[in-house]
Length: 121
Image (cartoon, rainbow, N blue to C red; front, side, top):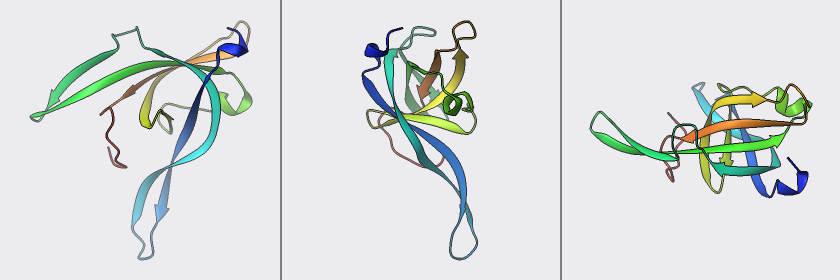
């Protein structure tokens, strides 16, 4: 991959637990850094689908994100981090590092509800 193909800006969000004024704990997603990426429609399981759970139909949108492999991005894990692209938050479902050249890595991501904004899943 050429660095000139990284033309989309993504934000990396990390899950933090914050305590409010009366001591309640709440999980929040905070942006920790942003970087340039190449975002394409995922082809591993199709690009979009719908699922119905407890009578609610949700759209699932899948994307593949190619980013530079740096010490900061190597620390990313699918349970603590997610990305925000074009105003939509995507859960990281898989991280595929390039062990041969150590230059780029691919994130397999999907949104639970495309276009919806909420803090709790």
